[in-house]
Amino acid sequence: MRVAVFSAKPHDEHFLRLANEAAGHDLRFLEPRLSPETAPLADGHDAVCAFVNDDLGAATIERLAAAGVRMIALRSAGFNHVDLEAAQAAGLAVGRVPAYSPHAVAEHTMALILALNRRIHRAYNRVREGNFALDGLLGFDIHGKTVGIVGTGLIGSILARILHGFGCRILAHDPRQNPDCLALGVRYVDLPTLLGESDIVTLQCPLTPQTHHMINADTIRLMRRGAMLINTSRGAVVDTPALIEGLKDGTIGSLGLDVYEEEEGLFFEDLSNTIIPDDTFARLLTFPNVLITGHQAFFTREALTAIAETTIANLSAFERDGRPVHPVPPPPAGAG
Ligand code: NAI
Image 1 (cartoon, rainbow, N blue to C red):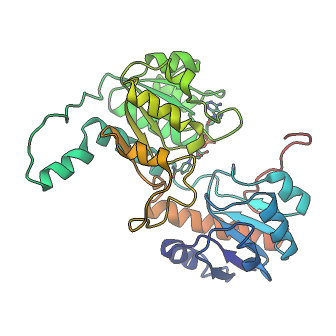
Image 2 (image 1 turned 30 degrees about the horizontal axis):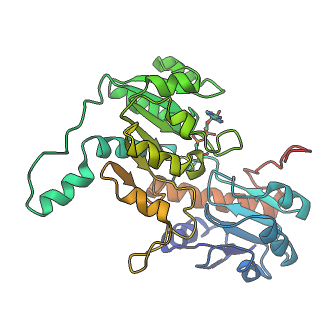
């Protein structure tokens, strides 16, 4: 199949080429982000391959369908950026990579917790400048603390196992209880209880209409004063201006983010020679107790290998059977 690979970085090209050796799809690597404006680059291709910050709204999908594209192969687990109704109406199949390395994301979440708690981001800079003072670097023992995990699917349950190893008391909030977590002694509670009892709150749920801005001014008010908040799920699960207020009044003691609601056009690019126009993001960067990484939780060799192999398998299955191995189901009739 002829496949236009959008938002292609050197690592995408490397791992997709390796995975494609046997399948032999004709992959064309394109740097631009997919949008209605760049969709014409897909003219003459059977499929597009897209990442998390590509625009797969109705306008893009209509343009892709007009270009003859029949399938969208997502290089991600999340599909909240795809207008599934538009895809269904245009007759485009959508495939995704449901699990590539939940360990990668769980481990990065733990890295944020540890780095923030012991202020490693500040210590690194201080020591390089010959400043060995300890003021402002005081942390706490993770052992014995209560950690609340919102979403105990693949990633959340691995994180629960890691935290269990640290000797934490673990609370969880999820409409589905995970037997692996129950076996570890994780206690399922409602969101207010989780927020009220946790020293560390970490978000591992998908972005859905129910989880959109789940952490907002009202729910932040329920948190234990000075608690740590981590978000490695999707940016819009939190209301960022509300986080800033929570940091300013001390309700949020420290904040670790790998995702940001307005990350499109920001993350995955080198903007070090430009002025960042997003004032909310710029304000977040001024707090000493905020640690932000640019959507890199997934970024391990194992995850990139798995993403590439599943993406190629989705393309091959679609070519052979008209259906990817891991289809994204269209929304139920009447869903909006
Ligand atoms: P999963 O589907 O295995 O687990 C998600 C869990 O969230 C499920 O148990 C589900 O019942 C639960 N959930 C759904 N609605 C909820 C709600 N309203 N409240 C609480 N829990 C709810 O997904 P997985 O693989 O664990 O990934 C979770 C999310 O992590 C993905 O949807 C994606 O947004 C994000 N992610 C971030 C990455 C990064 O690089 N930062 C990489 C991969 C995924």
